[in-house]
Image 1 (cartoon, one colour):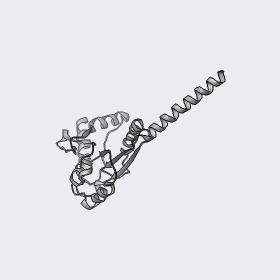
Image 2 (tube, helix red, strand yellow):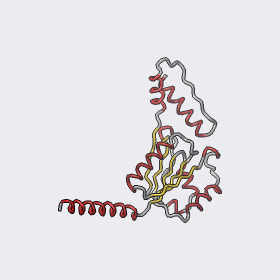
Image 3 (cartoon, one colour):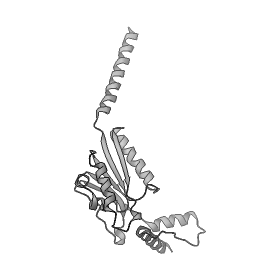
Image 4 (cartoon, one colour):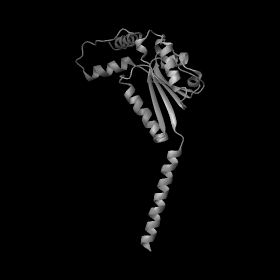
Length: 198
């Protein structure tokens, strides 16, 4: 009698777990497109992508598709991303049902806003970028009224002060930068931060 009850209990548990798995599999698969402003080798993109994947796993288990595109905006003059290149992206996703667009990084959202087709511009959007408003540089990151903006503030003075605290014998601070518009901006911010400390 006890063996029969245990067997029935086991079968019930097996059926419940099977139904739960099947109900999760029949949930509608979500499709997310992430457009990064810079090249894929950016160190900051790794923790951002890991965080996105972790959140998607929590929300949708494995019922999602994640697409990623990299605009590599540093390769082109500021504000002059080639329309033809973005047109390939427009065509690529035109027949894919997208549920969410995520724009990450330096000027990704403004480029999307300027060159994307309507189906992309009307998607619910998360727009993440560095916030330079304290330095007089504002950018419109909103694609539509379904856009959530995540501003990331930079505090070079705080970063440099922390670094100097790690190495108290420091007598000089050197900055190495490239020649792109963004590199010049970051260099100016770092030099400004260093002047606040010394």
